[in-house]
Image (tube, rainbow, N blue to C red):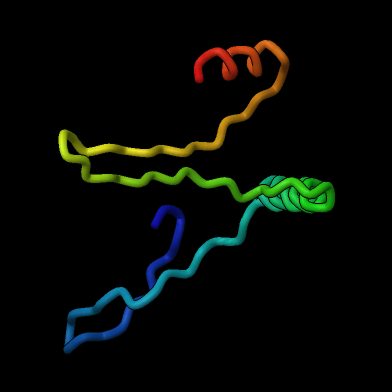
Length: 89
């Protein structure tokens, strides 16, 4: 674990074992970022927009091959990108 302090427990006379980690406090910039992110997610949820879009894959065994269905989130920011998505299907 990067930046964490290991906590040890004795396992015999001279040996010790890591049993947990103590994480350092987060920086002010990090706290501000996650606070802004939480506010943005609440605003989107209030508008009825789902923020949790995860990729999904499904494997199928076909008689002639193995099929793979892949559903991935796609962000469309303007009309040109929307036209590209419409043409690729």
